[in-house]
Length: 91
Image (cartoon, rainbow, N blue to C red; front, top):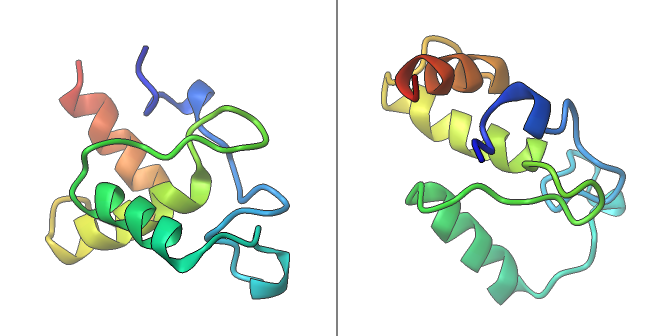
């Protein structure tokens, strides 16, 4: 299964996403767990699966898009650009 196909990805943050821009809405995880998630996302070992929808986490994709954009791998700093690049690459 391609977890980077659009139908398998959240379109926005879930209500308690660990990457939610509103810190008060984020699920309470221990710092070690958050660091573990950021580590495997930054090393592109895996996608992060949303605890609410069981789809690829939008916040995790944003986190990875920030890195890929800084590395000039995607054209725009957006989840949409990441997904388009992945779609073209994973053909």
